Every structure is written in C-alpha cells, then in structure tokens.
Length: 385
Ligand SMILES: [Zn+2]
Ligand SMILES: [Zn+2]
Image (cartoon, rainbow, N blue to C red; front, top):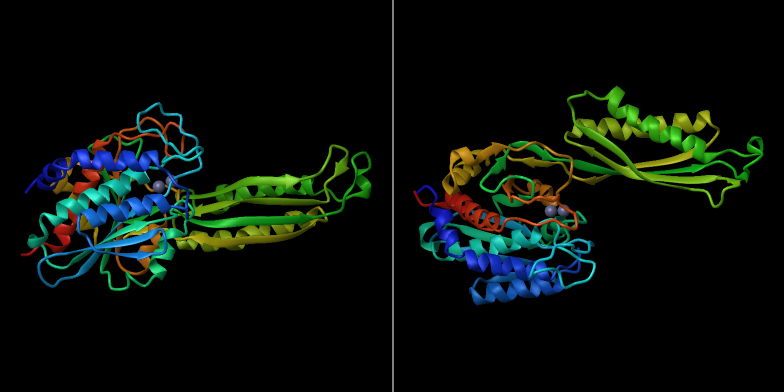
C-alpha cells in the first residue's frame, strides 16, 4: 500500500506539470478567474467528470465511487496576484502585472491530476468526491461564495492543501487545531482641527495623537496578552496632512489584527477602542474606531487528523510528516470548517523565494505529491473495508 498513490500520481507527472504551467502562464486576479475556469471545465469535460458550474468562476466536479457512501470534498483555489513576475522561465506569466505567486496554479493542477487517479480507481471506494475549484482566495471571499451556492451542504468532510514554498519537497506538515490566523480589519478616524504649522496652540494636531495611538496599540500585544498566545496588530496605513506648514486636522489609520484564538480576538476587539479613545482624548482629538471581524481562524479538525496522517504516511512515509507551525497569515479554507470537519495540509515545495514575491517558484514534484495526498485522503475516508 505504501507509496501506492505516489507512484500512481507519478504516472500523470507530465499532465500535472503541463496543467500547472498552463495556469502559471495565464494568471488571473481574484474574482476574474474566467480563462482559468474555462480551462478547468474543458479538462473536466475531457475526463468525463460531471460538474456544477456556478457563474463564470466556480466549478464543483463530482466523482462517484462504486456504491453508496459519504460525500467528501477536495478543494483547490485558482486565483493569482497583482505582481509582475521576475522569473526567467519558459512558462512565465503572459498576463502583464499578474502572477501565480502563491502556488494556486499548483493546487488546481494537483486537483485535476488527483481526479485522473481517482477515476482509474473509482471501483475501489464507495461514496462521492466533490472537486472544488474555488476563486478569490486571496481576497478571502471565494470560499464563502462557494459555500453560499448551497452545493456543499451535504458534504461530510473537507480536505485542502497549500504548497509551502520554503519547506523541503518530501515533507508534509500537519497539525490539528488552529493552524492559520483569523483577522479583523482595523480602521481609525481622528478629528482635531487644522492650523498653521508655526502656531500649534491654535490647532489640534491629529498626527501627534496618531503616532501615540500607533505605539499604544502595540502595548496590547506586548503588555496585555499572554506572551505565548500569538497575536499581531499591524498598522499598515497612516494618512494625514496636505502640506508641510499645515497642522493636520484629520488623520486616518488602518491595519490588520491577527489572532489564533477566538478569546484573543474578543480581547483585542475591546482593547483597541479603549486605547484609541483614551489616547485621543488625552490630546483633545475625537476618534472613531472600527475593529471588525474579517476572516475566521483556520482550525484543523482533530477528528480528521488520523485520516490525514495515515493518508500522508501512505503517500511518502511517516518520517515525511512534520508538525506544522501555526502562522498568522489567513486562509479562507477556514469557511468550509463551518459546514463540516475540515483539514488543511501543507506540502513542501522546495522553493527559495517566499509566497507573494516576484521570484516565487516551486519544485513541481510538490504537485505530484499533492495529487497523491488528495487521492490518499479519499481512500482513507471512503475505501471499502
Ligand atoms: Zn497567497
Ligand atoms: Zn495561497
């Protein structure tokens, strides 16, 4: 049994690479995955895999096994990023200013490849496998759109994969519980009064108050939260002023909050307005603060952990499995976990540049491994006794 799925997937290595390179050459931004989706639907047609097409960019394929059984879903995201590719490769992006710099090209190719392996073994499992080709992950909105189609309400378990660029090929990182962060979006509007730069006593300066607020917000993480409970408050925009001799009467500050636990989110949601309000009032500035929920924490189901562990060991070996380190990036796969147990695995892709960089690339072996892992998970869950 060991490595069976890997050697099966290896039979389709050329196909996997060809699919990935096509996607890589034709990146499309979130919500605009039209050509990519048309390509995927054509491939599913060629494979005789029936699918539900919702709008121009949501596709849910279906492979039925032999006999009744649970319905499970495998997910690939398909969107790219607004980055100009610097890699000098034959399959370089032909769409100016756009690049598959997160590996979603590999995800889509791996799921198509998994479909081929599953089709050749459909008599050996019972139940149904749905193949989700999801748009707009990078905007954090695609998974919700897919769920809102209602086409996944009968799914019993969800499985997804992300390639991890800086992890060696041949390693699969797993962890149950929280693995990626939840986010809140932070918006602060400060109002004072403008005046002459040389006569500060006639004005109320929002920049002076604002810089203290930016620093004060950091104290929530460093002085109020448990130091072993991960959280980030990043102010990423601070806009104020119109010229160098006018004191800014208005300022806007915005950023992102990241947490790994809901209790921490709740704490920060209360602490942020308190810090802003009190610092602002100390400087006679009025403040409006929003710290709204943006994305869910990605929690891997402990119920699925043993299935995924066995699936990964069957693809490579138990030595290939490492414990995933939680991180505070976000991933909208978390939304599927609201419907049914869901699990997100990380596959080493042996690259040298980070995700979202203009030199991002992967070792294509990771696509074959991902395809095998999808297949192996299906067999762990649906194989006939
Ligand atoms: Zn990304
Ligand atoms: Zn991604």
